[in-house]
Amino acid sequence: MQNLHHDYDGLIFDMDGTLADTMPTHFVAWSQSMAEHGLEFSEDRFYALGGVPAGEIIEMLAKEQGKVVDANAIAEAKEELFLELLGEVQPVLPVKAIAEFHREHIPMAIATGSPKWVAEKILKALGIRDWFGAVVGAECVENSKPAPDVYLKAAELIGVDPKRCHAFEDTKLGMEAAQNAGMVVVDIHTLF
Image 1 (spheres, one colour):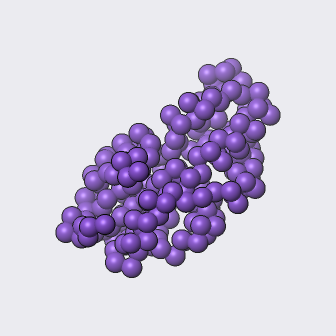
Image 2: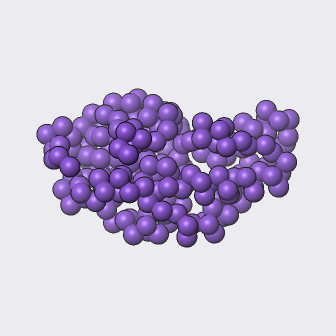
Image 3: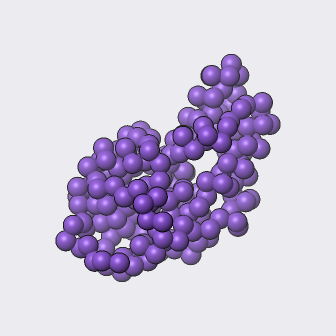
């Protein structure tokens, strides 16, 4: 792996689907929680909405499907179910390797659409929480991806100019968010 220090001063990683292979587990948790409330949520749609906070997704689907639901309660139930399944989550190895290579040398942070406490739990489960100077979750900022807020906040917390950061992402919305923050974006699918 070449040393790219000249090009950037900080690395910021999305978590779900980028650093941790949580997407299949999230989908199982979603499927069960949504079915209990009679909401349809296809796998294609799930991947298309990668990076959008759970509450927003539930409200959108309920509105489309003409249902009235307590979005917060369903989102909480979904996260609880997800946490029960967390033992199965594996790291995305090529991305983990990049983080491991740089962790002693430059500031790194996490910018995720998941709640901060869930992100902390996943990073601890993977044994890599201490690699990151900051973890920014959905509730830490006003606007979710594709708005740049989580990326800007993450850069601010590790003290690096967003334009001097590389962002690692796996979804279209996430890549837009990082680009909107002025970062150089690495689509992790190009790493495999």
